[in-house]
Image (cartoon, rainbow, N blue to C red):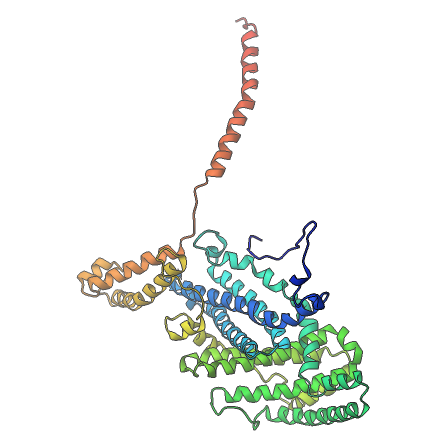
Length: 506
């Protein structure tokens, strides 16, 4: 795939590996796979989440600048509502990706082995990176599909399948790993029950089973109560009005998830591991609650910046919406229809009343999309925080430097261009000619030069790479020579035949 990623078979002949070279010495011989699996939780928490997040940050920074520079119908393409929708999705997704990545890698810093969080970020961040890069390709259009030095998206686009495939294929990770392992590791009693059963400790097993049943009953009641109140009145770790309501919604989803997990384990039993659509959707609920929690934590860790509120809200609302959608899809397709109907009532008691639905977490609104798209398409600290950590070149010949320079110039020139447009409307100018605007004292010479520089920078950014067609020229010349050589004998034969033919009598 023309991507420098070492992922293939290793082979050799008469290879000798001394016992001392085995990790852990000869005592650990034959335990390589076990060591690999134990290390996977750490490596999977760092490498692919970091690569995916950096890819999303780069795609967002490129596209937010390009959308402001590129014009169509005398208007930046980034201000079209359809493009704003995609741009907001890119920026909000990048924010939640960085939040989830940071929360997970800090667990590793604390010497933890975050097996489930690492699976969550591996699957969801690589999938979100795929979507974000695809969105960037859509907005860049023809610029993105013309390969060359100035195309900064093509290579990233080609490398997407690698992140999806390695360190646990995404389909398997979603369907089997996230909830399959998460159910055991995050449940307050299940792992203890398994350990007690393995140790044949009947007293401990009975104790944990009773605790499990009581926990299930309490959470069933809590789920119904929070379904009625929509999570209100629950305690939150903060009084910040910007985040408090989202914490309460996470509390509600957490109680509902606990109920669904316990009932599914009890009703489906051993067949649960074969019901991959069930485990996948339960995994989606768990994953999106984790991402929503990480988003709120990320916002607070960065100082609760006022400028970042639209990004935080978009990421939190999208995560909560995705979690609730996964839960509703599960209940609509539950293997046992009777149990599924009861669970619908227990998770959303008010849904039986008129005008009350099961969907209480709406996706981000059009208004919020506009705020996020405007925020990321404007130079400033919020945009820099969102895309922080990626390489920004200082070489003036680098394509990214040229784009960023054009972005700043175009934004600076926009108020001046507005002055010219208003002067034309008022009849002070008969055209948008800059020299006439200077003579009419609508603009100063410096302002006119700024517009000229912005236009030149825009042309440099929009232009795609073009190369001399030396290879095809040589091929065409060769084919022309071969064609001429092939036709020469036929032409000579025809001339000789004509010469031998007798002249016609008049």
